[in-house]
Image (cartoon, rainbow, N blue to C red; front, side, top):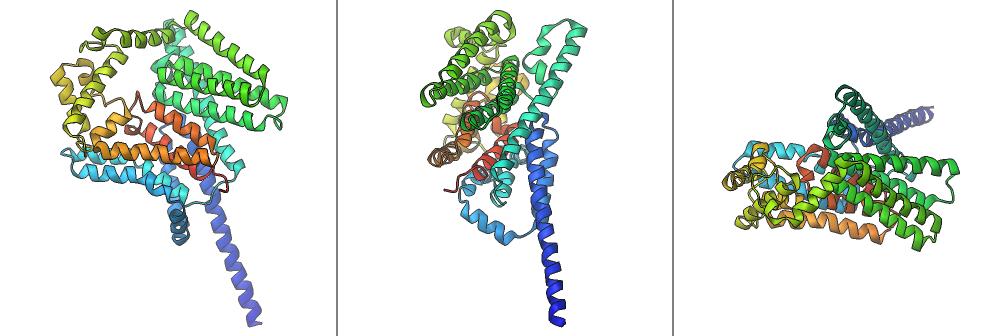
Length: 426
């Protein structure tokens, strides 16, 4: 009798432990999915990250988590960038700014540790994460368009449908374009790998979503966003024509791309003018050296020149993450670059920003964080991660993406989820 009673008690205890474990696993999945949905809205994301961390801590089982972290050695590479910034804060004169920078970059530490030490999601569950991001983008952009239409009705000004006027209610257009381009890559990849199993209805819905999101990228007028979109569609067309031998799909996509470019040039002056401005700046040397210019592309060139000059003075360790903007502002003032100084602009290039904050050591580390997993993703055919690295690497060129929460949360999250939850058995 005692034996039977002990057995029943032990089984009851085991069931309890299993149900608690199951609860935390489900909570992890729900929160991870909600984070993907929340990215276009930005302000809700930090709260969800806190909930994710609390769930991870309460779950316990740290021995198993340490075991998983020791297996996923790439996690050390991912968190090393954050650890280097902790060191750089120590030799910053402006420690307050350095500590704030560490707060902004916290996602680069939290996501790799939590995701790598959690049980990998199934393929179906990772697809739900992608769907959540796409759903969040569709809802947020519809809200933006409705808001723009209301403002247009009040002012009769069409600029409300473009650039930061369109997206300012939630997020900067460059970041939103990056999110959308990744979503379009998800959809194109899904179509490429599941063509035979997709229904006609599924293909039509997917095509409509791609067309809609592509239209939003054009309205957002982010030049790098449009460039990445054209690159993604071009790669998709080439793959359909030459790898899959789907001539009709390839021809239709080429026609869509050509017609879109012509219509944008004819009817969307706000968009085409930004492309013309960039082309003009690159061709006109005088314009690109005018310190009083108000054109964004010309100001960027001046900022990059200042950043490179500062790097040459402190190349190995940089100035520390807390002193970068102070050094840039001093250089803007010295050169008389009025717009950059008045707005206290950062380097507007993540590679230069990293050079200034942590020197060549930081840039090499950032390069390794992008290059090593990129090579592994090709080796193990994790092509969604390959696309992700290409998108962020290009977006790092005109923006210091890892200096804002919108950039660090997105990079930390998808860099971890796509690498640790989207791998093959190999």
